[in-house]
Amino acid sequence: MNFTSGAEAQELLSLDVIRNQLIRLEDTIIFLLIERAQFAYNERIYKPGAFKDEINFDGSWLEWFLLGIESFHAQARRYTSPDEYPFTPIEKLPKPILKPQSYPPLLHQPAASHPSVNANSRIIDFYVKHIVPGLTGSPAAKAKAQAQGKELLTDDGNYGSAATRDVEVLQALSRRIHFGMFVSESKFLSAPHDFIPHILSNPPNTEALAGLITKPAVEAKLLIRLANKARVYGCEMDADGRVVEVPDEEMAARGKIGIAEVVGMYKDWVIPLTKDVEVDYLIHRLDGVSQSQIDEWMAKKGE
Ligand SMILES: O=C(O)C(=O)C[C@]1(C(=O)O)C=C[C@@H](O)C=C1
Image (cartoon, rainbow, N blue to C red; front, side):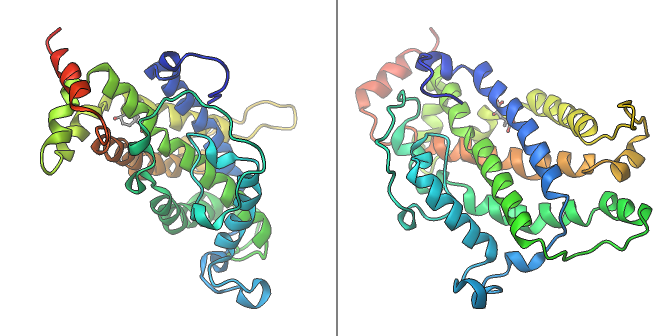
């Protein structure tokens, strides 16, 4: 999202604008997954210390990549943007070279900067454990290799290429999932009195908050749209540019990514984690807010 386009905060926080951003990120994520699927699983790059001799680094090759790339981006003030969270702990990154940009105050800062809202360790965990193995060792990938008379390689030695793609996918997933904060802020401001009692109850009523932010119809549409996008973006064309029409099952084998894998990733991980971010943000939405402001919001109930 372009936070410095001059658009008013109210416009940037409209649910339509935010949802359009989430829809656009679906395209980004699908294309980046297609890029990662060109390379083997390369499990070595996720094992801490596996490249210690070469890089003198105790973490994994992927973490070393993240540190290098994020150090560079931090200098260009990437992590001062409200929708960007680094995977490397911020204190290990260099300070920006450029002066901070001024962003419109869209989020409630005590909530947005609360450590519980940062989902990056959960994102890297599901991506490495569940997404990469499925993407690179999927029935689709196996069938493709077989059709070419090859055995599916689990390690092709393309460690730099695979990790470069991993960093890109992780950054896009992180932006998508942390957009949950903007969704939450928008929903909260549209009816603060619905949320306040559940935030203030001791402990906060996370189930009720999750109930308030969950929109099953939006999720159902998203999953259908995603399957269609994965089908279209992953399809192949013949030499004349005509789309090769094939049934879904075979489509997965011919296409560059499995439709079921992309849909499953959203259903099992991306949407649930976005909801976690939304709820974790709401729990801290009243931190530092004055009693008079809370009273004012509550007075609007029934208006
Ligand atoms: O669009 C919303 O209202 C959101 O909260 C985002 C989202 C999603 O992750 O796509 C999450 C929860 C809702 O149930 C629907 C969709």
